[in-house]
Amino acid sequence: MSTDFDCRSCGACCCNPKANQAAGYRDYVEVRKRDNLVHSPLLLGRYAVANPQGAWHLQLVGDEQRCVALKGRLRRNVRCEIYDNRPSSCRQVQAGTEACRRARADLGMDS
Image (cartoon, rainbow, N blue to C red; front, side, top):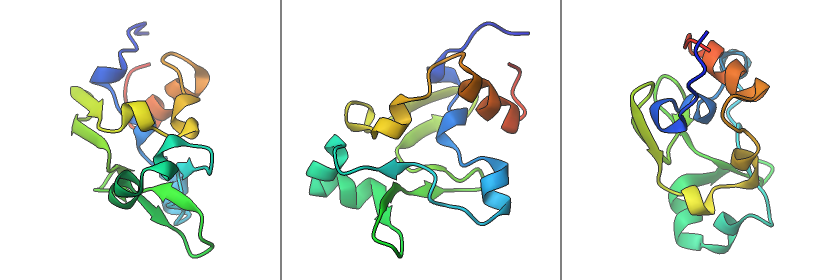
């Protein structure tokens, strides 16, 4: 079992889990009213999308349904373009925690 949980070489928690994808659930990371991203219309328009109920969520792209703000190659070298302004939901997952390990396992990464 690997004990190296370097977020810059992972990116798993920035991808919509397979169970969510199978259920058609794309509102993965909510942008709450108190999050800095809400107060920057330029960033909000570039990285988030409102669902039919009007709630903002980070946009998901690609086969992994990864966050549009995540740049680089999963499992190799990634970075968040909005790290300082990322939503509070993003801040909840810490390297090596159960949520981190679940996200890594979902993508078939050693944990």
